Image: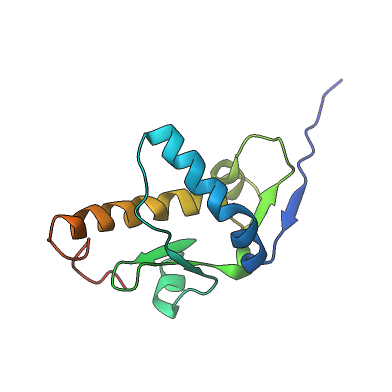
Length: 131
């Protein structure tokens, strides 16, 4: 007899997700990596057309210290389950949904590198436009 795993996915309002989770994502990243973020980036729930064409879940703009998320595809797993977003996104028909936790962690890495770069007087990082 086979077994099956049911995973509940929850759609989120992007702004509510940011308000409910951003501080915790930052806190967990600081603990895990042993660093302290210099400030908090602005986070918006809208990608540019160019970012959407690149199939980005999120993006960081060093000129405005802003993280952008794709509000149309934001979801999370049932609380307590491992974060399997990349596996599910690439191996099932859930399609182009994404878990914002990992995306925000990734974009915070750009924010942190940008802030360190600025502290050393080298301006924005990266100092070239991506989109």
